[in-house]
Length: 232
Image (cartoon, rainbow, N blue to C red):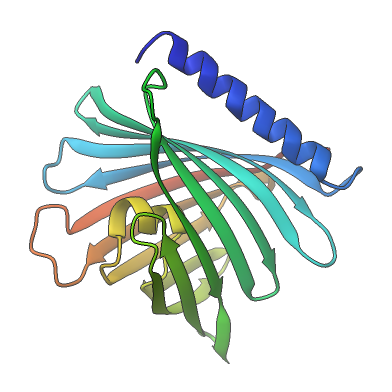
């Protein structure tokens, strides 16, 4: 990485976080979260991705909105081959969620650091509430490179076992995962989530791209989330 790049990244991140704080309503209800995610490829086993995220979000009686910065590193062994910087603005209310994602390439000494962008609107519609909860998840996605509206229909099945949560989903992933990892390919995810202390959470996931025969068709992901580290 070029020496001037990290300073520029830090400046942009701090300015964006400050802007999010100023735009949020004053007082309680604005939080700072941190999480780290590792995507472990099974073929080749030495390849993995690390996603480190910082999020500022505001919660009130009507909706939740926020800004999330992510440093995504694609790694083969001990050397980082590629680094991306992601900025996501989102809004959610009830079953609806809308987001806009901007992806910039690193290092930042390039003339044009732009890598890609997408917007996504989805709804998590519960159709069964029993021991298991079944949700239908329709999504509309537009990727800047194609400028075409892509409708996606997903299903999510999950339940609680004590304080832990297990789940199985089809075509339901986070916007950044859809942009960077799955694309338009149908994907099946198996999830185990375990709460930790003070509202923190650990999750283990297995992902498999359907209809794919390449070495990157499946992977493991572990996520460690630290919620509400600071409250403003």
